[in-house]
Image 1 (spheres, rainbow, N blue to C red):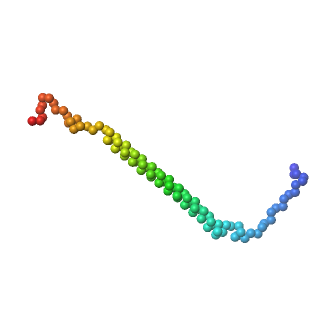
Image 2: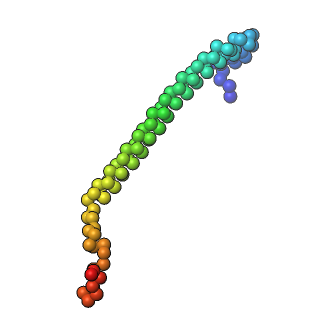
Image 3: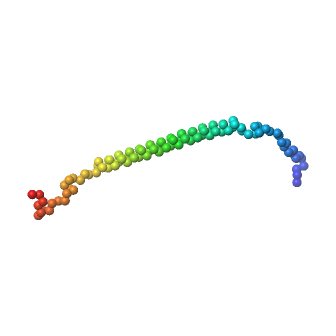
Length: 96
């Protein structure tokens, strides 16, 4: 059932447009590349910053590991020279 108080809307007429009125043109192309360049520069800056952080933290971790190894070696008991040689047997004199 159609509504009795409505009138059908007229179909839109074609408005003649020139191609330069409907396309972004050279200005839009250049402006788009300008904004893409700005975004790309920002992304490169952010990636470089993150990679420097990773590199710095890896170097710091290597330094901490080397310091821990040196501390472990310096606190470990050193074996004495007598402990490295087997003891001489009582009935067999080796030193004359």
